[in-house]
Image (cartoon, rainbow, N blue to C red; front, top):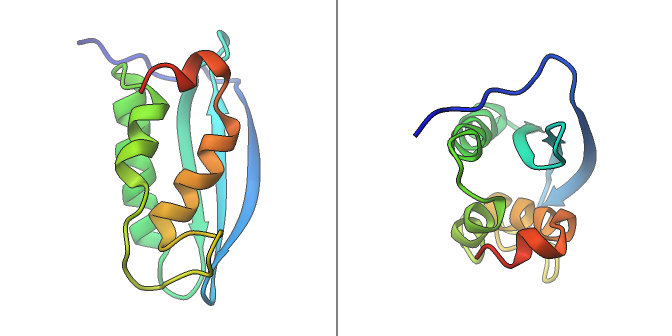
Length: 112
């Protein structure tokens, strides 16, 4: 499968999440066809490298054709420290997946 790298100019949306004491800023970029193509995360309290790694792997998967809905499905319901509050996610991956699911189009939701 061929990797579709993002164009130099792309657009996205950023949200601020909180899991326990950790603040996470997550950005979802889309390509010219409005398909999710790239994710970035910035995190506090020593979680930055972990977030970078997770989002880079998810971005490469999307660029190789994996639907974002499949990626979020594998991030949901993970329980690990730091733990969040009910409704905000059981962990950083769970909180990110919850937010990403709100950004999916109806067509993307069908790709699970």
